[in-house]
Image (cartoon, rainbow, N blue to C red; front, side):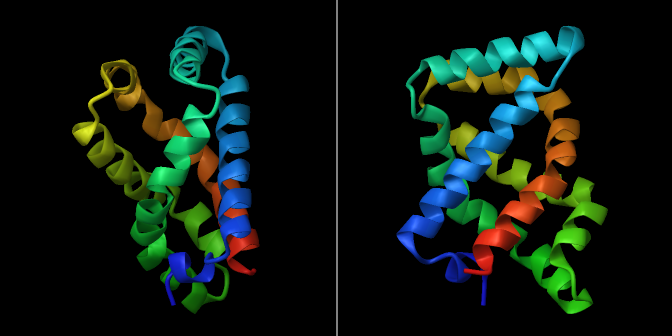
Length: 145
């Protein structure tokens, strides 16, 4: 059974989206230095599109992200600890998540979002890798039902 099947309830999906939004907010807020300022400024522009833009974007890509993560999650289930497996394979996990966002941005008609994403895309992989352990815990908590 895939992750999308495990997270069927609408409230569970809403809670998962809220937790992922908070994770991103916290990750961005924790960034320091010049690159952190750039990330915060760009994230601010994206959030300025609308109060719920980020959570809406997460909600829209969530099914594709969960499908992309299914193979590595299944590997982790076979080893007995999918959370640890994703954390140990954070580069691969980040690549899976970013493949979904890359495909979505490619199709986006929103020039502000496309521009912001393209400016940060090269440097964002390490940020996604840093978030993988917490993302894995969030997914696990909601997949457990």
